[in-house]
Image (cartoon, rainbow, N blue to C red; front, side, top):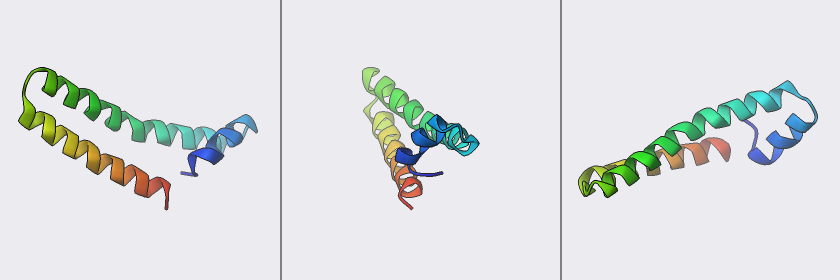
Length: 71
């Protein structure tokens, strides 16, 4: 995946690689959003243990996405 700053210009230029990169970015963002919603749900249900574990998983996912985008 190209850096996000290059994805939008590729899409606007009509390059297929830009659309593919955007799809890959969407696939990477889906688990991040899911874990955020799950963590908030656990905290609202006063289940702090699973909320904290969900935030830990979210942190690991964020680091892995950041490393893949900043390669």
